[in-house]
Length: 128
Image 1: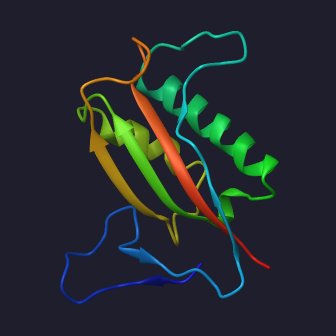
Image 2: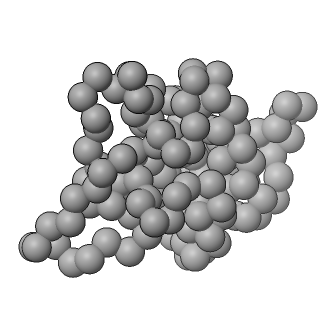
């Protein structure tokens, strides 16, 4: 995934300002994934929830024939921004930090179920 650096905006820290999708690639858009495990349990804390979100998102990507290397865009929905360092650290275990995906982070009043802290959706470009 080629990324683009722009002369105007400040240098991106941990994300790309833009990601270019190769011609002929198949795009995979995921729904937002949250930290609910197979038995319906929500783990406690930012690190555990973020790790489970990325695990669940990885499973969805794999089911569509995509990998983390194919991800070109992440959209985050978080209920608080006080622990961004933790969620970025966990994210960096999954994405290629040398060419991170473009990202947006939105602080929300709450997610669909009490106790959920983070939801992430992805767009992947699978080479043809």
